[in-house]
Image 1 (cartoon, rainbow, N blue to C red):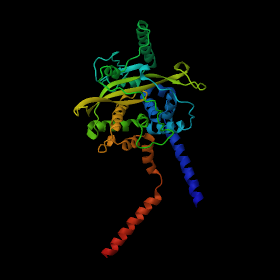
Image 2: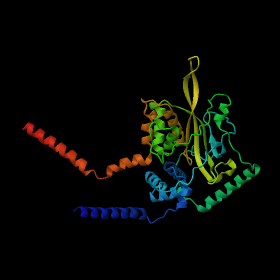
Image 3: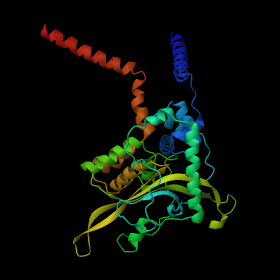
Image 4: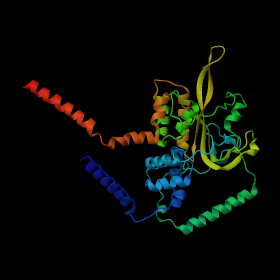
Length: 372
């Protein structure tokens, strides 16, 4: 009987997988990987961030396989990531070296280097564009050609690469922010060691940056609404490409010149300014600022700002506020952990449920006897 049950279950599973394939193919259309890369940038960026694997092609492939399901695409990417060898660790990146595409500040109108609006939906009317229903590839190519020519003319006027200073450095020069010595302690790697509490800041930042976008945003919003004590002002949002370097594999002592450039990654970085009250040497309360930090793959400014809020929340544990409880935050924002545990409720629970039914039946049976 056990063999028949296993065989029947296997056949049912195979039939379910075939039905899944049928549902994907029944429209008789194929979406190309390049189409996803070209038209679904935000979705690709989110999948890369939540899976902590920077590969636009693999993210697009996962999106295609998952038929647009974020949680399934992230699950696929995480599973694939676990099969890859760790060949080396990249060197620490200084975000001042970012090739900036977008840079704004909500704290100052005028910032060193100026504000750069870049590519964003923030200034659109958020109205449905019905022209997209009948796009013309020819018209699109003409528009691109005109735009690229205008860019080329602007680049000819200034052929130098501009690196933008950090806004917080401008404030540090005025002694408005405390300066700290560089901490060169190797960061924890939560992909190789299980998360332990209390968690280090490096571990917390890793969990936050690969947290589910909606969950991170929701908890950041909860803090702003009063379920926490952090309400920052965004000091700087910057989006752009960061160069990645690795050490020479055969050199023990090496300088920066010995490092190998292996490519760029696009990231969003946020530094939020959080007002706090401290007592000075005269035991008087005075206002100071601390920095909440957020960074994630691709362009996802809402999540990164929310991450900077939660970073600052977790720096100041307050057990009466859920957003300041690192165990509550870090264990509930992970996409695979949360969706996996909820999805497991679909799996067979026959034994435990039947046990509960037997208990209820027995209680009702005894109660009926007492009534009689």
